[in-house]
Length: 130
Image (tube, rainbow, N blue to C red; front, side, top):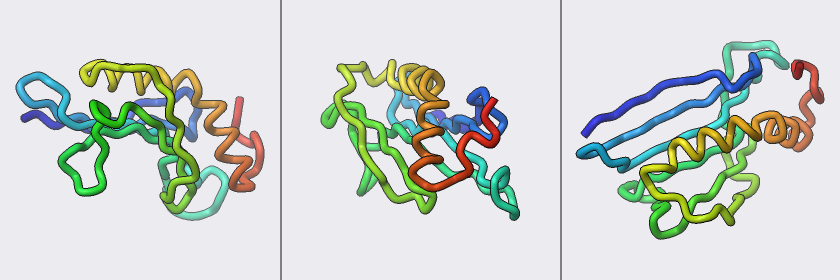
């Protein structure tokens, strides 16, 4: 089993992607790919990254998801980590292709997801968007 965690820029200084990937015999067995927002840029205080949108697959966890049975879905999150909404209706994606699909989806929609998050949470609209 191999486990990999890393962070990647999402194109704006206050957005990033966080990856957690677990493979077993070269096959994806678990993943979490989320778009994160840095609240420090709008509020005084310590570095404060929080997830605003998340794809995940972890069939072994008590509250985990299995995309091979449930299909792929995107959790939209509140600042406290609770779910605001769940987007479904993604076409069939092979488990091995999910990490790349999820990364591309979040990157291509990062600004739209950011605007939605800021508007829902009364965060200074567009203050740091270029």
